[in-house]
Amino acid sequence: MSGPFVSWDAAPSVQVSPGDVVRVVTGDGLQVIRSEVQPGVEFEVHGHPEEQMIVVLGGALRFRVGDVESVARAGDVVHVPSGVPHGGRVEGDRPLVAIEIFQPPRTEIGHGSNRARIADH
Image 1 (spheres, helix red, strand yellow):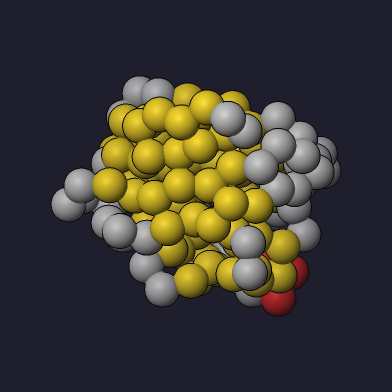
Image 2 (cartoon, helix red, strand yellow; image 1 turned 135 degrees about the vertical axis):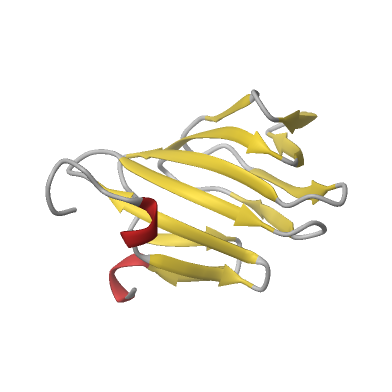
């Protein structure tokens, strides 16, 4: 990250998989990602050591964290503790727009077998 102000348009863009594009801003100990994911895209169940928060800005996300499943919509926040298996699917006919926060920052981004190194983009 260069400087204290970053435009999403200037943030590195990573296509995680078809229909799943993220923009990434990484600080020393925290990472913020803006996700735009097309309807029907699925996130295989996966886990990672980083704690994650997902703030849904638009669309609908059917999501499972551990043994709990629900549909998150605009205004909802999903908390994924470190190491807990999670995954889901974008529902409806609108793209999911979300802010994801990771602590500590991830060096690669993706879901299950779809992974891209952030440093390469």
